[in-house]
Image 1 (tube, rainbow, N blue to C red):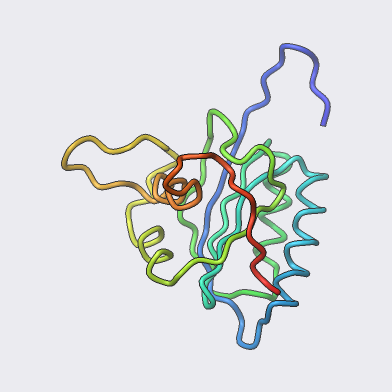
Image 2 (cartoon, helix red, strand yellow; image 1 turned 180 degrees about the horizontal axis):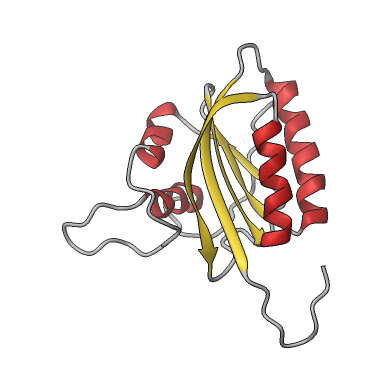
Length: 159
């Protein structure tokens, strides 16, 4: 995707949680990751996919003309069901610029802590005293770990 020098391309993002279909296994997930990574690279989209053994949580970011076809592929995928949108909107910067589709296996309790909170956009800011941490900030916190290092080495979800 080429833009002339000095032209800033608006970035969009969306996040969802869904339930894996019955019988999905490590080889299926590996295939999903390979296919998604290739498609996302062409579309100029980056993001992460988390799996807790039962549910998927995916966050994707990129130019609108890249995010839209990726979202359509996600909607039509047969590997999951009962997709629930968590948030969508503009983002000021890419949070996962090096990953066409990073992946991590997480515990169900960690998934709950990310999806069962407010998702009112994609603010990465820590809450002020007494405010609840929003979902996207929790996703970043889980992804970066204790060190705060952005984009640690991806962990294979499947095999």
